[in-house]
Image (tube, rainbow, N blue to C red; front, top):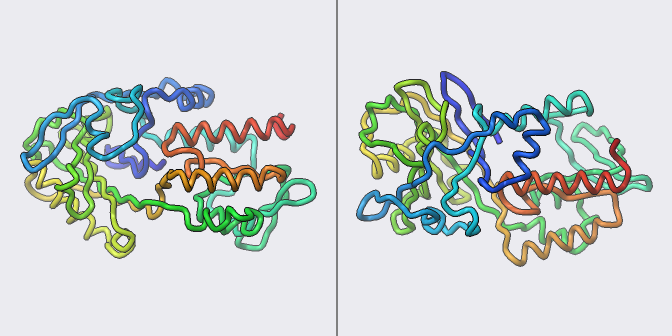
Length: 324
């Protein structure tokens, strides 16, 4: 979760929200004292773009357009976020932890190993930290590298974990540059109309309050790029793709006031039955040791799943008597 707040805009670099039914995220927000910052969508309906243009979609139809697996309970309810952006949750967590723990943001870990009295973490600079328990909340492939042979037969499966990449481009315009009501959450693109990997767009400044300055709007374009394109194309190339894509869908004139390009290579785990079995095998192998896997790489996509996974890891630590 990353939120860029500048020039009156609140730009999400990562997740823009969490599922409406979530209980774990609001509970965490309340514990951190930011529960009153939670907000819902200003609008709920979405558009679909096909060869016949834009049309309003029925509740839940946007998920079907993109082949998302969404529970019946979630259909048509949208998502929630924080008034100042999703990074509010990270900022509040950091503030809380700084008074209770030693934080080393930006430190690179190279190895995690079980020890006689718990586990150890070795950093890139050679320093080593011994702990009663280590929670590895890292991507699957990174986890395979960190734990190596301690994963047993699950190592190969994590090292080759199936993933997808994502690129988002946010475009800011004067309101008069876009001749559309922007009266929905955004649009999804039919499969046969997806060019250059463009799958959807969000009317960011209409979907949530306080996302842009008066008289200006922002549109966020979502791409599912090839592995080559996510690394090969620079920001200008992605911006041009985004402009070409949005102009196919909406009547947009002129150039954007500002742009933000966010790349997430290999960031989205694919929870196939085979991968779920690999995770289960890895956790079974680690069970005798003081090493716990946590996070969206292992226990489900989305912010709600990540928080629930973190809660489970904390419960494990508490059972082992490691927290006060």
